Length: 131
Image (cartoon, rainbow, N blue to C red):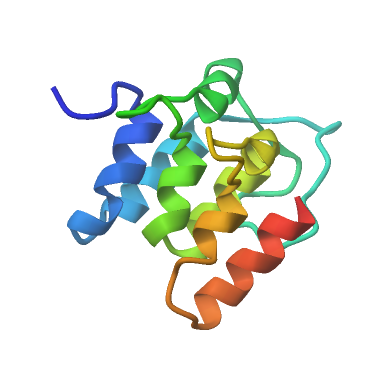
């Protein structure tokens, strides 16, 4: 068994290892989302349709912590290497995870700061701050 049990955790972890994995992850998020006319739209570009929210199961998974030190959410994993579109979808469906801190007080924004600077990182910073 790998480091993660949850499907979103596993997809976030395997995303950079194989071409097409990020598309599979986005498809997973879309298929576990629900239309909700009361859902607020994010203040950033999201690949998900407007008025989309996470299903109850997905909402729980997006804030669940797993991994070697039981500190990783799907967002925290994806923010290390994932494309802005995946991070936008995760922030759209589970904005609470963007505020969650690890044992050293670091949020996903802190982890994003460790990425090499490029246009993707700039988008990611703006999303994480907007959430």
